Amino acid sequence: MSKPPQTRGLLAIPLAFALLELVLQVTAITNYGWFRDELYYVACSKHLAWGYVDQPPLSIALLALWRGLFGESLVAMRCLPALAGAGTVFVTGVLAAKLGGGRFAQAVACLCALFAPVYLALDHYFSMNSLDLLFWTVAALIVARILENPRPRDWMVLGVVLGLGLLNKASMLWFGGALVLGLLLTPHRRLLAGRWPWIAAAIALAMLVPHVVWQVHNDWPTLEFMRHATQEKMVHTSFGEFWKQQLLVMGPAMLPVWIAGLVWLCASSRWRIFAIVYLAVAALLVSSGSSRPNYLCVAYAPLFAAGGVALERFSARGWRTRLRPVAIGWLVLAGGAIVPLALPLLAPQTLIRYQQALHVKPKAQENTEEGKLGQFFADMFGWEELAERVARVYRSLPEAERAQCGIYCTNYGEAGAIDRFGAQYGLPPALSGHNNYWLWGTHGCTGAVMIVVGGRPEDTHPYFQSSTLADTTDCEYAMPYENGAAIWICRGLEAPLEERWPALRHYR
Image 1 (spheres, rainbow, N blue to C red):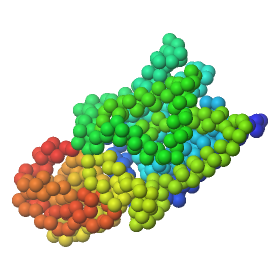
Image 2: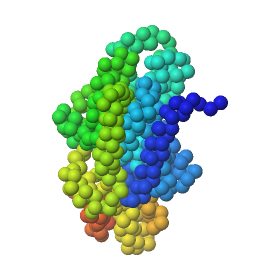
Image 3: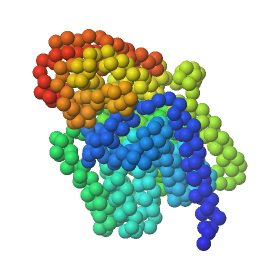
Image 4: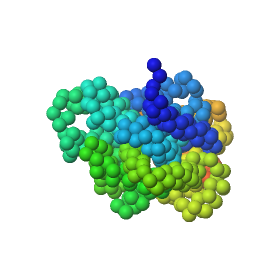
């Protein structure tokens, strides 16, 4: 039996915008090169485990399966996050309908999810982040179903979604904690008197057990990673700067919608829980002082959906109906103008001029010098060229030295580039003390002859009998610390590499 026309329409709108998301992502899919983290994740997918220093296992397991089915091309890598992004847009539209919105509300919500700069950026390259957005949005939709009509089946599905989310990224803990707080602070607290919320929590936590066992077995590396990242890596963000960055990462065009959505949710006895989730996560991030402002992006889908409903009801009668095409036009034009700042649609020099024309300067979120393009785009340049230069240095060695040579890189981006592109040049596997590369060990390298990529001479040279500068990297648009990075030939490590390896651990 066919669905009623109205139901068909309410599904057709999210589907249409989801397809538009795919079109946008496909248009830019190979315009620049591999992203730093993608190279690392490919390496991780060749070392399957129940956990990694900087993430749980789910996204890496999915990547291993995806690579097995579709290969390791850049297009194949980026289809999965593009599909996740389309799913996020679709579910946001469905959530708007669940909150009581019609076609206009859905269109507004979907446009916000489509054009939010941080959504576009995270859905462009493979990482756990595009999946995190999707899991949060799906979890919000399931919660809305439960608040409308609590059924055991929905609680169990929520438990599975939360469990998958936790196996994908630890930030799903924020959702779970904020959800409990929201239930306690609203009349929905009566739901906690039943057994099904606790069954859902038990399902989620049971799914996480293998990862916790891995953490225990490896001395909780993720806690060390998080501590170093917050203390050393992240730029401290003040209260005012945090909210200023929300305007930029979510897009100025979306500000009226999500503000209206937040107010509408606060005023709604049924749906107030979503406002509490958003505000609780925001308070957590602001209080830390060193969290990236874009971490809050996962909590915006309910605000987009509610904002669409609020604007729809405000413009339902009289002259206000004329505001609807204005609102849609504003989101399309103002939101579309930001797209080249989030997706690599323009050539680098054109992008630089476009940023200057809009008076937009990328804000550093890590304690590093920004490049011409900002870190997001800069991290898509220079990797294959780095592997090629290292290969030239490697081939310059006598055959006897090549047989025992190891390649040590100072960060996982460089190491991932060697592992991804080095096979075609006959390079050995990369070594690094950075994050999971440290856990993968020395691959039997003794340290008698090593090519060392990047880093400061004083960190490396004292431990070798000789160090010779063989080459430097050269990529105008890469991050400054990757452009002009030294490539050294080092000989005669003072002690076997296996003995020095514990001191090289660098989780951050």
